[in-house]
Image (spheres, rainbow, N blue to C red):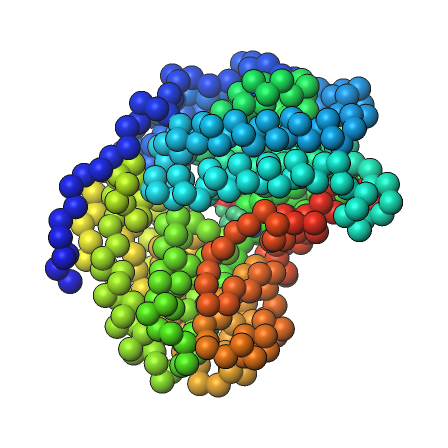
Length: 478
Ligand code: NAP
Ligand code: MG
């Protein structure tokens, strides 16, 4: 489809991100050099090295955990909730004050479009601190016992798809409940977590309450296996989640796992199709499809399948792919060469297994890691693209005839994180939501996040909830 008009470039200035030539780890309230091999964080949209980041060795992990333990015993655990709340409120406000800087840095390090980091990631991260600050002095009213107690030191490991937001999801409830934290950001996106460390320092959070240790998977494993860590909160792949669960078996540590997904987005023939198209696009192309709860399986009622696919292809052809810092960009860069290779492998498997591929004709930059939005029609349930998480801008389309068939296809997955339903009938929404084995079911919308709403999975999508009153449970002792 010919564009209706041309857009002039509208790039956000990268100067405001203030990316430094090097970053250090944050332990016991100080930025210190780690003894691990430094890592280079790159800008996936250009493949240039952004900065060098020092990483943690096993003894750095030990120091950080001990600092967190001291902070827990000496200050944080004993501090009244209304005092803890002041620090958490301060962090929330400082994130909001530095929102533009954080948004640009996030887009540089991760590749996501600036309009998403600016309008979704950073404000929601700040909102998580605000929300949990409000809980810190009200825990006895959370319905989790008359005098709920913190657990101790929380080891937290997060992925690269929402770097600052995942750090906020982890740190805010832990602090509100009186725990201290050692957090490992993902290897490819450590920068905004280190700015958050700076914010903790400027907020005069007592030393050791939050520690940030960049590094690769081995730093995560070291943290998981440290004897003085009382709780592990992990967000990432099902594969690593299983490893962690195995290594903690029988050790009596608390564990929550937020893992992968393969969500069904179910469209009935009475759905408002134009609205559904927007929801489907948001469901799978938001954040390049690097979303655990992405609506990656579209289940559409056979009678409207052709019409819907036609509308979808037209709409997707208008999505603009390219420079993440351009305010008109809808789809940014794939986060890493490895992830791009994984997306290519799975889409090749889709073609080999006989699904019909359509790829948006949008121009794709020569440098950087990019993948044009793609739809597979004629997908069968047995195909890899219907079963495995692609974690990229690729939608698999299946059809159904009856509501019962929709439910059985939707639930035919080892995962169970989220789902969507599009219909005009309220009764059908409630019926389907009750039958869906998924932690979140969105009705006539998709990918809505709010700190007050619990989020988490069934089956291989993990266990435990983050957000809302329920999310506090994961950081309080029973
Ligand atoms: P990943 O490979 O599992 O990595 C997640 C984190 O674990 C990273 O910080 C990683 O370090 C670290 N890690 C790797 N090996 C480890 C080990 N043996 N022990 C401890 N930590 C280890 O996942 P990813 O590829 O970064 O992220 C994508 C996955 O996360 C997808 O499957 C997605 O669905 C899932 N996800 C789930 C949610 C949710 O809420 N359910 C949210 C976002 C993402 P490195 O960075 O160095 O590899
Ligand atoms: Mg990077």
